[in-house]
Image 1 (cartoon, rainbow, N blue to C red):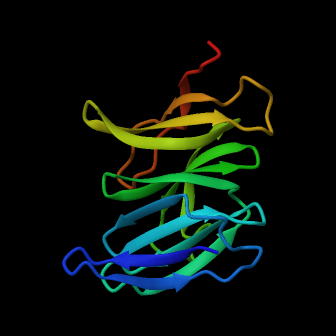
Image 2: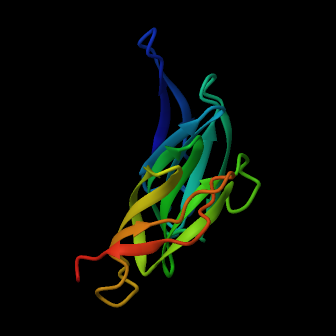
Length: 178
């Protein structure tokens, strides 16, 4: 099973912070890492076809907690956009973009869905300016659970509101099958 280490840039010291015990909710490996002030999060798919999140204090390296869910089946990446932490995940029906709520006990392991990708598993995401607004762009690949030609492509959100939530859903603007 994976272990978590913290590297001190000033001293060059490497410290083990957590060693994951094997269980159905243990990660196969860590696929995503992200941070905002106050929290650093590592996440990965589990042996039970879910996703597990580990939260750490980014200064001390102390583990804040962990949480596993079957609501997501895979995770690819985290991205900080306008000070908010987002991730792209796969679900049983396609994909979603999720936003950190600030505490592992809120929402689904500390996250809320801010948009879905019909038939596509979220891969990479980024924020981009659109005039005075900020939007989220997400690449997606097809889910093996959906018919060929659905889901894969580039998805764009509506403008983000003051809470970092898109005002309208995600729309696929490009597909490799066009």
